[in-house]
Length: 121
Image 1 (cartoon, one colour):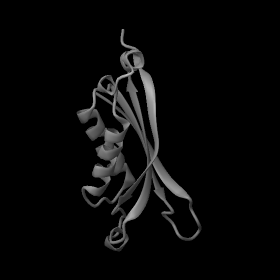
Image 2: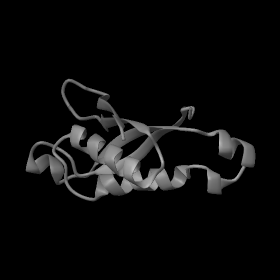
Image 3: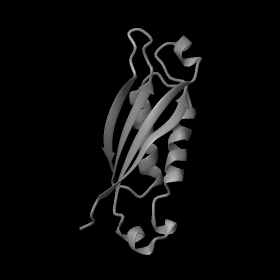
């Protein structure tokens, strides 16, 4: 049975045109995204070779590309698209995605709003 280890890429800073109104989408906004990859790390752990591992830089670039690929209304949509793309591009059984929209509300001050999803093949 394949074991599932977890790799966490935390706080990927991305810019997206996101918001419910057209006015909100005219100004790019900051998102902070965590991606947790569920995979077997035994082989790369033994070989110490990137060719056997998931390249964190490539995963981070995938996340950034999804964020800038189009305008979004909802962070839920961003999370779904990231999860789908990561599952498509990498040999994973499950991915967890947490998307935080930084300072989404001016008054009262809100640090961030977030959505977290878990998706599997």
